[in-house]
Length: 238
Image (tube, rainbow, N blue to C red):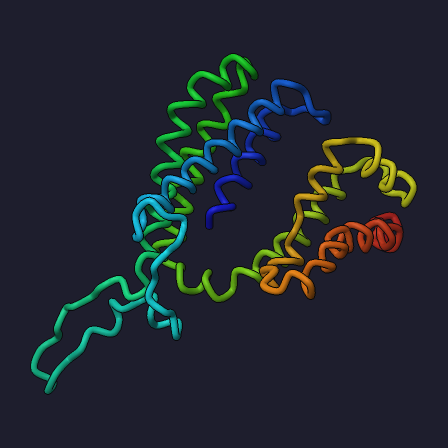
């Protein structure tokens, strides 16, 4: 959940810039977005118990129902429902709301100055986009936090593959040499492809020695698209 606002921020900046190459202005906005989300994440950890520490003291999660205690209020002797709903997974549920609120506050403090100077006429578009996706992320977490907690590695992998395919689909030259040259020669394309770390989500790098080499698989979806692009060319089906 912490990486979602950063991903959306970078995507909105890229869409607002409407440039196929990195410039100093665009890079400054990227760095600004990373700093904003990073500051919000650090402050969230510091204000979460134990206070002033980067550790998190949390109740152990045993099942999906722990995220939705509202649906499990006791009914002793079938006489009346005891509404004793608490955050059974504290603070994993509430701290995300704190994080998103801090993201919005820091963004409003920084982006009201930077975008107008770095991307005149377009910089405000990134701000307006954030004012839409941040509330959407808050609602998504409020409703589906438990489902996301258990399924996020697989969701990240699927979205990573879809994002890879969508990125390559916008390239004009769909030949294998053309796609390879686009990946290597353009810094923007190379950074986008290296940002797709979805294959590592399922392991979460719990064992560095075993899972570390899996970093080599990050370019695999991109290579699969490049090698099979000629078979999916629409002209083959006319």
